[in-house]
Length: 101
Image (cartoon, rainbow, N blue to C red; front, side, top):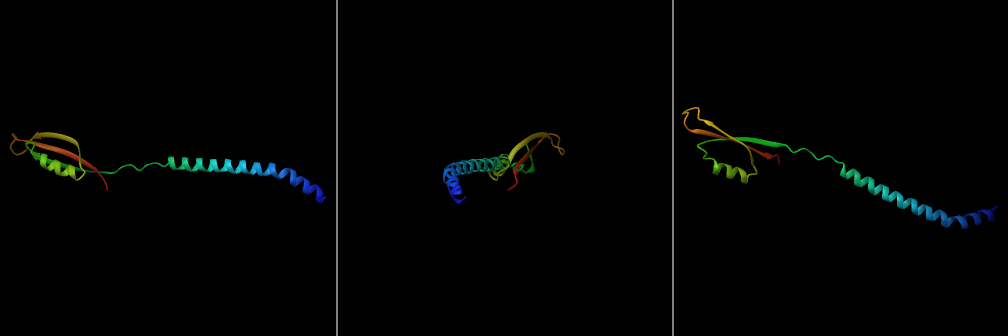
């Protein structure tokens, strides 16, 4: 009985070792794939923006717009309308946005 177990282990050990190595390699490949897919499937957060309006008369807002641009504000909208006070001069309305930091 002992001799049969010795012969069985002696002849089958290389086959079992090779199968275990193959299984270990397959497991490693599958584990790496799972981790890569899990990292790729994360949903990025939506960007939150702050909005700001700027009103000037006669389009004299270039210096103010430049200073706001240096602070990270982006011009997204523009319109003008007659002044409520005089009716002659135009009021320029600017809408700016920037990402929340």
